[in-house]
Length: 351
Ligand SMILES: *[C@@H]1O[C@H](CO)[C@@H](O)[C@H](O)[C@H]1NC(C)=O
Ligand SMILES: *[C@@H]1O[C@H](CO)[C@@H](O)[C@H](O)[C@H]1NC(C)=O
Ligand SMILES: *[C@@H]1O[C@H](CO)[C@@H](O)[C@H](O)[C@H]1NC(C)=O
Ligand SMILES: *[C@@H]1O[C@H](CO)[C@@H](O)[C@H](O)[C@H]1NC(C)=O
Image (cartoon, rainbow, N blue to C red; front, side, top):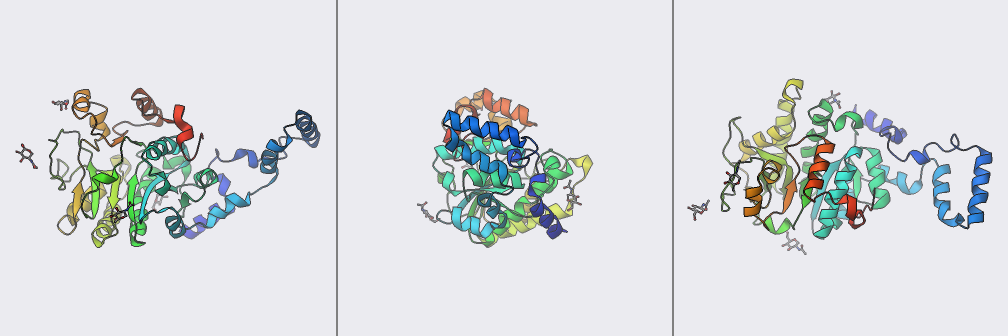
């Protein structure tokens, strides 16, 4: 089943997203030969012929060789190219999230860690777009999911999309890399790496809004009302240890045990928490400090707390809110929507 899906998408990659490279997809229908001649003559007359050649080549070639080679770019190749000092930063992105990817990348570039970012593209449009602008920094792990449904929070498509996260992370640690996973609705205000102290297996952040003392424990928090903790699956750092692999395997198992149900609007976070709880006695877990890695439910909702912890914030997560529009607006309101004025700081440039 999965190999069929994969092959089909390879044969016709551009059907995955209607937004992708539409210029190179409808060459002759738009321009009659006569129109083109006039256009060419006009370009020569205006002396702007050579800069336009690239665009014309784009119009006539069905597949750009420089782009299609990324079809066969494997996770292993991507990791050996992108990882620095055995460490990689990953996110998983489908086409609609590109503005958030760019925003996140600008903030990472400001902390000088962009060179170890690997984008796990969830569709071919994203794979091509990122690698065209920033060769080698995106990889697609087949099969591709239905791009339309994949970004609807609470839908089965969304669940399938996030359910692959522990599998990707397990593969990366099995290949021997340290990996930091981030959701792309995050912004770095400082370098998180100095906070990954000690030699623990798994580092994570709490999604609870309850305010903790600055010297809170780094242990897995006790279970809440639902019988489990509320750790966020949005920011995870793993060392390539047996402990980290065990947590990922347990997470995958938990996801399979609690399959998607429409009524529950499931996502992958509860399964991650069950996995952490069930492996806690065997694995070295580390809860990152709340003041540095606050949930959006705290950062965007309690100005007093934000003032009290000024200068301590490292990564801000735009959660506890649903929809692109609301997330974008909130980032704008807080001066964290960097793509409007600082797109050129991104390795992808303006998208
Ligand atoms: C490389 O990794 C090692 C072990 O994880 C660490 O001690 C060292 O500081 C890292 N070096 C750089 C330049 O990041
Ligand atoms: C999600 O995954 C399940 C099980 O693999 C599959 O049956 C279903 O068709 C998928 N749904 C979507 C919308 O991707
Ligand atoms: C935090 O500091 C308070 C006051 O100094 C102390 O009573 C408490 O035990 C500390 N907690 C931890 C987890 O170290
Ligand atoms: C907001 O933060 C302040 C300062 O930490 C705290 O005293 C207050 O209880 C918080 N408010 C809410 C609603 O959590």
